[in-house]
Length: 172
Image (cartoon, rainbow, N blue to C red; front, top):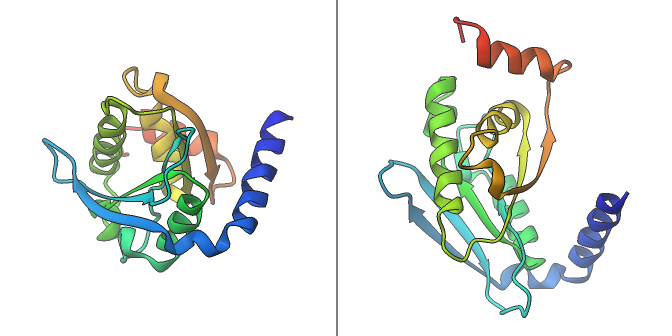
């Protein structure tokens, strides 16, 4: 029940701070030892309490982290005080669904966040196909302890069957 109250508080806070969406710093950061690039949205106004970071991977689209919907959502969440990271997933960008490559890109992005010295627990918001792959990556032993929560909005009727296919079917 507490999670419902926290979610409601986030939306109320967002409604009060719509005007602050422009008070966001954006930068592209390369992930060391990887070809992955991530866009980081940081609130310009300093806050006393460090909030969780949000990892927001884009879904299947040709704009990647430049998708206007992802940018608007990232800026809105940042205006609520969160640092938001949007990875640029090249395999999804090309509509070339390669589970191992996409999982590697997600793992590189989350590993980068986990290794940040001042990193607070990570919240993840993901949609569609990328939600199942992100769930798989967050189960890795060096990433799992740093994950605070995952919000998945998936387009699969039976997510368990899809995850079993991705993890155990040799054709995946």
